[in-house]
Image (cartoon, rainbow, N blue to C red; front, top):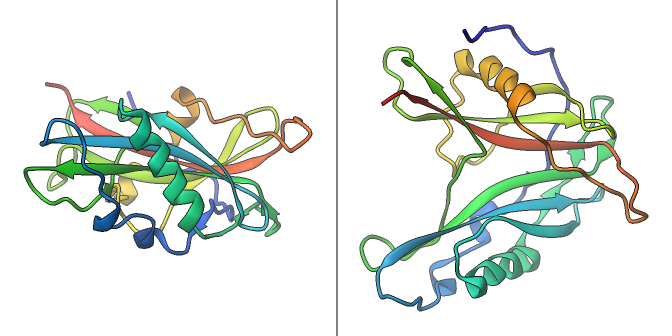
Amino acid sequence: MLSFVLAAAAQVSAPVPLNLKGWVSPTDMPELPGGRGFWMVGVDLLVDTDGTLRGCTIERTSTIAALDKLTCDLIHKRARFRPAQWADGSPVTGVYRTSVGYSQGDGSDMPWLYGYDLEVRVKSLPSGMRNPTRVRVMFAVDSAGAVSSCTAEPGENFEMAENKPILVPVSCEQLMQNYKPIPVRDPSGNLIKSVQDAVVQFSTHK
């Protein structure tokens, strides 16, 4: 049975994109094979302590290598960040996760951001809450990979995360139990602390 124990108060902050809506545009939409379809590219973005984007890793492939590469190329070219922040206020390396979706044929040809990192199945959701519903959280990760200071992440809501307060502590609990954070290394290859984020999706049993 899920508990609703509140996570410890935290002052950590994941990297904050300063121009998220400018990462992709309709003119970037390539002509894809098949004429109609939907493709989604999930990315993990490694952001240095000065806000510089150090790396873009494909976490969920679109199955089209050229589209995956285009997505990271566009993000490297355009993305700007405010660096992640540790609990003491100091800048720290961070990981920002999101997805870029491309629709062709039916619907809009505007690429859009969407996705989740962990799914939690429940018997029911509180009254008035849509199914599925999502919570976007951010959390500290020490050099040994231990997660702490998990809290709701504010920001532009392309993942359609509602961040219902009652689900935030449950999201953090489930994430700390079931989600493996990305190991982050310095340029010398040593494991270092970071602040990361993730989207947790709650859905009812079918």
